[in-house]
Structures are given as structure tokens and as C-alpha cells.
Image (cartoon, rainbow, N blue to C red; front, side):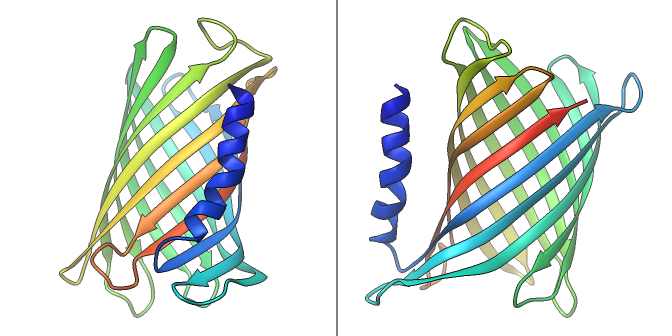
Length: 227
């Protein structure tokens, strides 16, 4: 199972780069840390950054070369309504190459389900992006995710797991609509000390209503720490 998973991760970016009108590939590291400020209040901080390695436009040769795409700094405050439902509010500051930096407010509801030996997560999120000289962009997002343990009926410290998710995103800005979709497949390790490490592929498609339909494939790896 793990060998097949890694073969897919290595081959998928190559196949994707051969298709579509605009394609990008790069690295996507992220770090997240969370802790309980009070019995009911959870605080989470996150840094994620995209670093491009190759760009390709349809009917042209791929252009190789490193560039910084963007870096996001995020902070969240959340509370649980019950063991399966939580609500969260957050803020993001984005450093974006070739564009003005932006601010984003975030609101979300998360729902957790358990089916057999795996978890199903639902996340409904709205956000509003504010950038200099640009109208406000409003987005509505829904993500469904699956976490599947590979070494037993439940995930215990020292064990591996798989994560799959899909997230369609609808946006509107100055009356113009946009649509994006994000698919993630990753292999994770639940380490001692409430740490998780994940590595996989983050595949994004957008500009569905534009002639310049775009595909972005990121090799994503992250460290998630809960204090």
C-alpha cells in the first residue's frame, strides 16, 4: 500500500504538467502549533509557504527555476460545541510575490464523524480577502477529508496513516465569480508528544471560467504540533 502511494505521488506531478493550459509545480512546507488557552478556548498558529520550481504554459516548454510564490501567517481561536462540532474564527496575513500583501478574515464550522476505523471531517468556511487597490473578495469553501490508520483499528502514537481531502471553493469579487478545487493525498506519521508529520501532493485547479485554466501541483509537507 505505501509503495503504491509513493509511486502515485512521484508520477502524478509529471502527468499533470503534461496536461492543461497553465501548470505549476513546487514545494509547499507548513508548520502548525496549537494549545488550549482555557478549558473551552483553543489557539492555533500556522505558517505555510509556496515555492515554485517549474511553470508551463500550453504548447510551450516548461520553465524551470525557483521563485517564492506566497507565504501565509494565520491565527485562529476556536471552541467546541460538543466532541464532534467546533466553531473557529481566524485572521491571515499574506506575503505575495509580485503583488500587494493582503489581509483575510476567516470563519468556519468543523464536524467530525467516525466510521469504522477512520475519521471523516467536514469543514465549512467563509473568508473575506482585503488587498490594497482591489475590491473585497468573498469565498465559500467546503472540505471533506478522510483519515485512515494503516496499522490498526485506531491511530496510536508511532503509527502511519493516510489523509485524503477534496475542497471546492466558490469566490465572488466585483460581481465576477470564480471556482477552484483542491485535492490532497498525503501519508502521515503520528509521533509521540502529540506531533504529526505529513507529506503528499496538493493538487489545485482554478480559473474554470477563464481561458487560462490553471493547474497547480505542490509537494506538501508539514509538521503539526499540539502542546
